[in-house]
Image 1: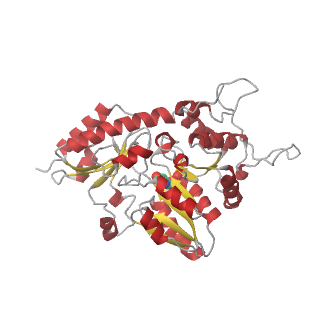
Image 2: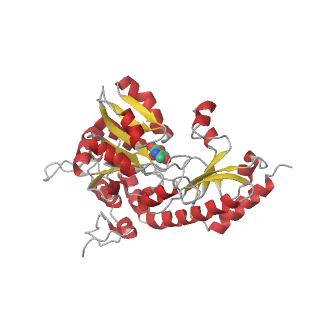
Image 3: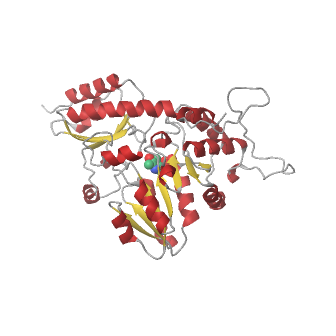
Length: 384
Ligand SMILES: *Cc1c(COP(=O)(O)O)cnc(C)c1O
């Protein structure tokens, strides 16, 4: 049978580690950290990313992103930092999107300077801004789309073409879209990173990261990654593999719910603004449509002044105010006091993140339940 590329098939079957001993339907878990070195092949060791469960899950991650190979890490930041350290050395320059995950942007400001690595952060990524920031020592271009928390869209084809034309490595943080809704390799992006703590894990109980890329790139990243030691334990590798089996089902439901909720909020008299790439009113809706299979489960919105925001968060009964995102349960937060609290009020203002902006991670609950919850919380938090 020719390997079908249907997402749910890939989620369930790709890279499956077979139970040859007992014929069980699920993968056996190999937890050894010591293997017989006299056996042919490479030396197996968890920090070398080559134990049976790690290798099997890497194949699934690669298949999900339409790349040749993958690596599994102990966190999203372990994956991101390994990629940076594999491609950048003292004297090099990297072009980065400004609106990226706070931890990544902090890695650049905290680590790059003392390593002697230069970086440019671009407010908007276009062919023109990329060309204007190109230097003789530029080695890499790094993007994230949709962005957090404003759901801005970056044109992946433009980035890939610019990278190819200038012999740079392109990398993307694809966490928000998930491999179900967006496959950057199909647009020519070289390296695709996920915080598997989010959609891939999906149940708010795993911290992990992944990298998908061509075999040569993965071999190159591996040489650096094994020195930094950011591998994931085989127990968690096994649990992550189990979780990914339902990735397609979860993300489809979350995306469908989010689209309905975005439309509901956009029409609501208590709501000032909704940022969701699936809305026709989103300034880059057409671009999102051209590069995403679905618009995802993340959105942000601003309530009107007649709603007391703290009371609104307090009154929610189903949707949990919580850090992190992408679990099966709906969660919400105010970026100004959480994910983006380290920025100054001026920096937030400049980036369009108002104190009243709420970021909403839509879960798999029935959409009617979520709408009722939002309605009752707005009702109870209306200013008298
Ligand atoms: C959470 C997150 C990360 C970091 O992942 P960790 O698993 O927390 O290290 C990176 N990028 C995005 C977009 C994220 O949401």
